[in-house]
Figure 1 (cartoon, helix red, strand yellow):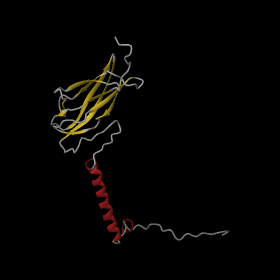
Figure 2: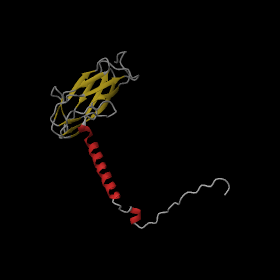
Figure 3: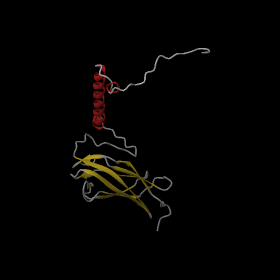
Figure 4: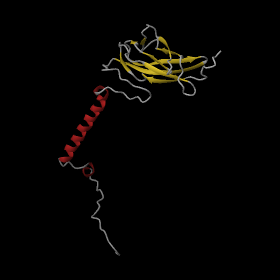
Length: 188
């Protein structure tokens, strides 16, 4: 039987951890934070939140050595789990998250990635905005792309400055030419 103050509906929102990339074999120094609210958006205190790691493939264990950890939400409706020890299998993984209070239940998944590439620091992706910070390493592909684009621009500029005919002229296409404009003031 549900208590009088128990919510009718629970909602789970991932506050921190979605999309985080970890090196294989490492330990998570940041974790997953969720917020549990009721049908009106009010935080739910003392809801039981279960975090479940996959049984096989990219996965790990919580600090307890188990694949499941249960945390109660605080007064702000948040529950956090961290310190997971990741295994040595690369790829994406989904942490199944379930919240319960009274008769109300809710569930979601949090996607993470285990990689064998060097990760300078665990990128921190918060909320649903998916913005990461991390300096040069997180922007390396952008800078490489900018360098390639700049090199292409310089080579095109160098070729065109040598007097190389344009592709239209080289193909022998007679492009229409516009003469000098004439302006007539008054009656023609």
